[in-house]
Image 1 (cartoon, rainbow, N blue to C red):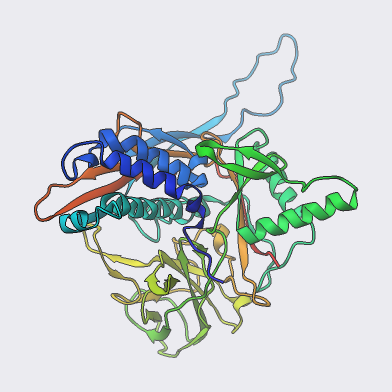
Image 2 (image 1 turned 45 degrees about the vertical axis):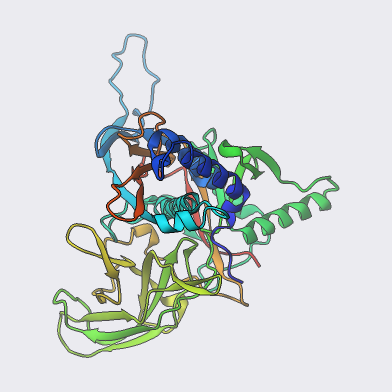
Length: 480
């Protein structure tokens, strides 16, 4: 059953609409309420209230488009025992200076004055449109924070899924995943984080609603068998008014971003190709599957496609075309929802034998970065090698598609170390217009050049890869 991607926002939806509507009407004149003085703080608060993921992060305002930070790569040298009159050798930790470049995330809303005037008796059209654009902006930000991939899309910043190297693994190497029999899989994730220094850090689990139910059930069974009272899950409070379940005092964020809810909807057509000329695939039979990544995370792939390469040249590859962008059915309407696509390939006709070779954006862009089409439709996608390219990290090169078993999709679990210095919890941003409120999200009115009002919602930000080894990503876990 399709999960509503706005489910996590429902708790505060009515309150946020009231706050935004109030901010938009605090100044006289149509559209005057869009000024930052009235709206900046409301938008910033709303982002935290609408998203526990963003509520847990540590935003850091910077000046400029590049944030420099120090990353420790080695501790001081071992061995401090020595003689009374000995000379103490120098010993220093090794630190490298790294940088992260701010990326632009923005959207433009538009409301006609006719709509404002004719609907004022039953709806505040400005507040309604602002709320909808804000929700979409937050969903974009969560996607980039979790799944952004600057090697696949130069206009994105890297998300945590692309930063992890030390503790990125699969719960089951088999297609369809495996259902945990006990809570050792969570304990093992915590142990890995603790051993790298995360024991006293602020952390959170990200799991699907179904996985949270399985965890609660497993823990309840343990407590019942031991004759203990209660459900077993404690609760903790975090910023923005969120009260979350917790396991071993680590908050559990129930999110729809960790599990597939649908399979690839577009028809995928694969064909042999000698263009472009940098292909490096030999003659043979290859099998390909394409999986979309949406606000709900990676989805199930298309049916396996068979491609025979027999041109006998050293420059051949596979051309992949889509009939349409992948879509999600929302309120009975097919809505394009893919943010990126993952290309799996292998030489054996089985999902478990296909591994991740390439990630691509779902969009095509002009030379100035303006979105101008759909990847796979406006332009073909090319798989040029059976070695994963730069868009796939070494840690993810063994990923296999998430396909259903007994009608249940396998999914991901993420233990996120949110420490800003020795974790992945710092979100640098620049916001000259929002100095008053240190706002991560800025609203900007645009000039009224016709009979409508336009506004921008924007963020200039990037997640900081301070230290990835205290975070743990577990893939291919099935909740039932």
